[in-house]
Amino acid sequence: MSYRDKQYETCLCNVEEPGIGILTMNRPKAFNAINVPFLEESYEILEGFHLDPEIKCIIIKGNEKAFAAGADLKAVKDYNAFDARDFLDKVHKTIFMIEDNHKPVIAAVEGLALGGGLELVLASDIRVVSETATLGLPEINLGIFPGAGGTQRLPRCAPINIAKQYIFTGDFFDAATAERIGLANVVVPAAEVTDTAIKIAKKICQKSPLALREAKNAINTSMNTDIKAGCRAEQIAWSMLFASEDEKEGISAFLESRKADFKGK
Image (cartoon, rainbow, N blue to C red; front, side, top):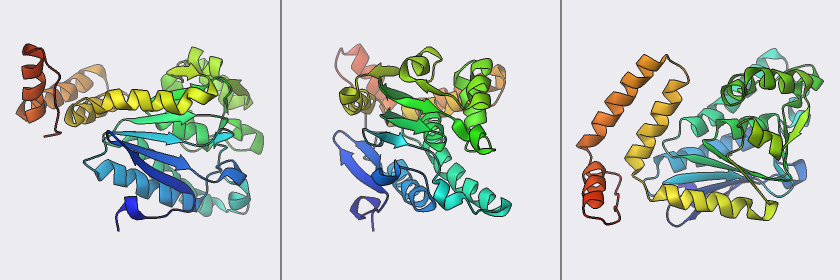
């Protein structure tokens, strides 16, 4: 059965033209707290988007009260060390399906984005944030610290001293601060978050899927290597695109002063 035909308990899955896959976290009574069923279902949907040639861009969203309010503490409170490690295996599996997905991923953030919820945002490529959103990594207040990539990704988008401040204190911060430190791409009124994300997604959908995939991979590679190795990886991917029909179409369309029609081939 295709992921499109399944009914999920913790997520909603929708596909909108022109090829936008929308994953909506759907545990409203729990403020979309992250548990194992959510991780398994969201991974299945994200993998479906990843493999689906009709999907060109992905949006992840919650509801007006919460994007996601972190791990479900009722579910994890009795974990031993091995249980905790197994849980994080599932968390990382899902988060890397966002970060490594062939399709660009936009986080549309309203309400609370705390702990693991913020770590989902940090793994996304573009972040559209409501001006009334509340963000933070409060795990230090529980005697732990961010374990789903927060200590790795926040210092890669914000100055390291700012990342340490919010990780060490557990303080919440607002959307204006998120924009100032480089975490948010754009801050808009709450009523405009989803529409803004869709507007950006529609623009991305007009581009070559092959070029988007290779550009995303080249950028991600640059975060884990020196600039010479990163440029070499970029060079190989860039050159490879000259074997594609999309590259021929893109350059021909430019020279002929018309809009390109990319096929992902």
